[in-house]
Length: 635
Image (cartoon, rainbow, N blue to C red; front, side, top):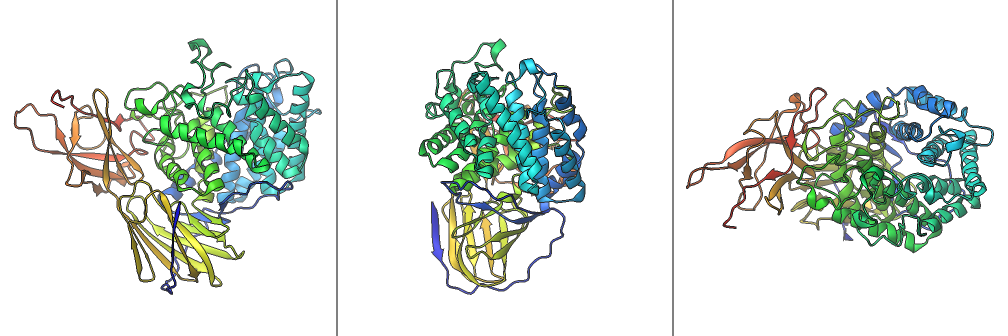
């Protein structure tokens, strides 16, 4: 829901800040040929320059992960074509789609050259019949073969969108044609191919929909519809008919030896990848059952799986884990799952313009995603627990990296285009990040929003408009769901306590130099999980806080109870510890366990943001988010 206020006040003219050209992108893509039946409510900004803390993270990943990748090593498996069961085929596509997003953000000649080399090196491995993959002929269509082909298609299409290079689109079409023909020739059902009830293989739905949009060739749309039809067969993952079933309970849990095999119908990453494709198909067809299935599944994931840091899954599968998040969990919160949950929410946000999806993106980005990224951006954790250590994942498939090293930047570099977006009626400010954002107004004019803020260290945001010609339109500002109080100021008018979890819309005639000021209250909120024992966690704004053994205070294993104030919140004092490798550090008061009848005085203990907790370029400090509480037999 969006609350509107019409302002007829001339806003103050202010000086606009100056920004460097580092870290800016221009969003362009090849024109679709097939018109969608359903249009997105929100479209990306056309040019973005992000600074501050988030900008530093983008720059670190750009330098130390994207540009540092040995492209030839990613291409090598496609030249040998001798694989029987591994998933080397995904690594080129994951890195490549990340690199295209990074190039849109910061289009340097160095990365442009690297991308061109990577795409043409891959195309040189294409067989005369069209196959681009790493599998031996006798094993094609099995295991992870189609999954790898999917990632090649996604990369080829992404490069075509960036460059309009027809040779690359032709290679993508040839790859897709060969897959369709091969399945028909062998009378093979795609949901019986590969792993996880066919979800890995049938997630090729997404690039097939993209190919139809860019070529208008009906066979790609027909194949996409055939995939969805097969989903609903007895052998399929039944992603539509089981949409109202909790995602962790859709199929019997497989035996341990088959955990990662075909019987696993709860595999989180692959499941969400299929729903991303289903939303693309919804746009093309307007079939409401597709959207309803995606929305129901999103709600199920949010209700039963997503933890306080914005991710979930164990051993890479859904397991009704939200209620278990205080316990030690095996292989918890895979980064591939974190990235795909982020992307699933971005699909829903641009399709609907609903604030709940932006709330989830913000929580996931600042906590689970950044928490999986090493401070220098060169590596990404495969699993990120809520207590324990952040440890390096193992190499996979002899590729020098693993799936999460490749996936992390895919989530990171989706963010720039979604901070601010355009709608048919005006502009949406989804996230608050220091920088400048150029968008298109309803009248087709260029407007730049300059955000001046250190959010979420504080809740202060200043937005200034650079608009060549006055125009009446809406500007919708997200009021985060966690916000207990807010103040919005525009040209002498003050609006207080806008509804949390909604967009607050200002509808008026805007001109160059207009300014909006926002202040969100940033309280230390206490969250309780009732179990035996009970646990508490602390958040401030969108940030989850944690104890870290490097910080001052009682030992990490000490039982501490937050010392609440009159508002049932905890007072947090922001400290300056950035030189020690922490983004945000706070001092707070806790009640320690007492062995006296009369209790004891509070003690000071430090907390840091979850992304910094246990996250170091050297060593692996212990940390914890959920704090166990004493069992009291009187309660």
